[in-house]
Amino acid sequence: MPCCIAVLAALCAPASWGQTPGRPIRMIVPAQVLAALNQQTVAALNHPQTRERLIALGLEPAPATPAQYKALLESEVKAYARLVELTGIKTESW
Image (cartoon, rainbow, N blue to C red; front, side):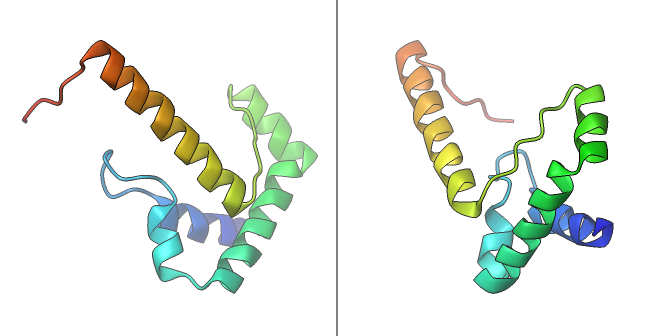
């Protein structure tokens, strides 16, 4: 199981801060494989020792399905888009 999590983490790691985490894996991994990885990840996050360690680090384990994760990302984008609109935040060139 740790091997699956390492592979999942590597595939999901964004190439830059501007990329959405999770996006690359959906583009290159078949849905059946993604479902199996998700199942293993959820099982790991629900394991009592894993939960305990993550909570001790100040993290909140939140296992979810790919559809739930997509819905979360969409709601976050909407919320932050509204914040940007209301505050007039502009991007800066580097």
